Amino acid sequence: DTEVTQTPKHLVMGMTNKKSLKCEQHMGHRAMYWYKQKAKKPPELMFVYSYEKLSINESVPSRFSPECPNSSLLNLHLHALQPEDSALYLCASSHGTSGFTDTQYFGPGTRLTVL
Amino acid sequence: GEDVEQSLFLSVREGDSSVINCTYTDSSSTYLYWYKQEPGAGLQLLTYIFSNMDMKQDQRLTVLLNKKDKHLSLRIADTQTGDSAIYFCAESIGGATNKLIFGTGTLLAVQP
Image (cartoon, rainbow over all chains, first blue to last red; front, side, top):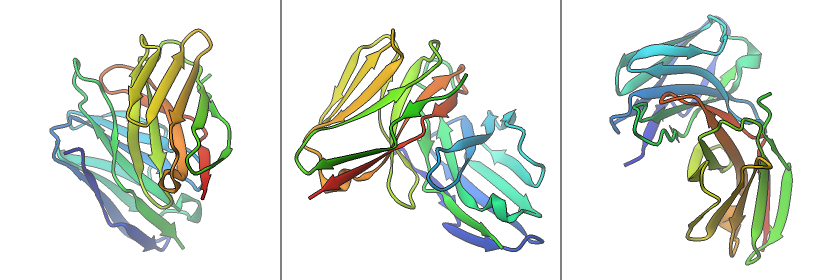
């Protein structure tokens, strides 16, 4: 099983709203990732968690707040977003353990629209 | 630099072979990947190749790696309309928690 699930599939929010994106995997992976993808562009890395600790933050604005409550779950909390934050948000996971091919498996994404 | 280049568009007829090319920049990359993305969907891992290999075949897919020229290609044999999608190559840089640098993506259009 190489499934990463994401909810919701679609999200529309105003600039004053607070919402959260959720990602889940049950492959025993210890690394989880958030990517942002604009239309017709490649995914851009936002955050990496390794063993539930934030290991990479690619200078993402503070209106995006990641959280890894346990090894299977990854959240992205959104607050005071701008219309230019509208994009497909992709979650991925990988073994994150030395000795394994660290292939990333992606979820289906959440399509976010900020009005 | 971290630019990974791909041609933007490829059009083929159903049943023909497709070859999608990728030029990467980091000679220390350990693994190189091919992902497929259908409209509105996430990224589907197709295959990957370790940097000490020249070729990998997996059913209709053949990956060729020229490490000297930093050139990677994906050949799809007997291309079908269901293969129409955007294809991204990606190189991994880093250790166990690797960072993927994606190519610009190639839109493959398969004509019936």
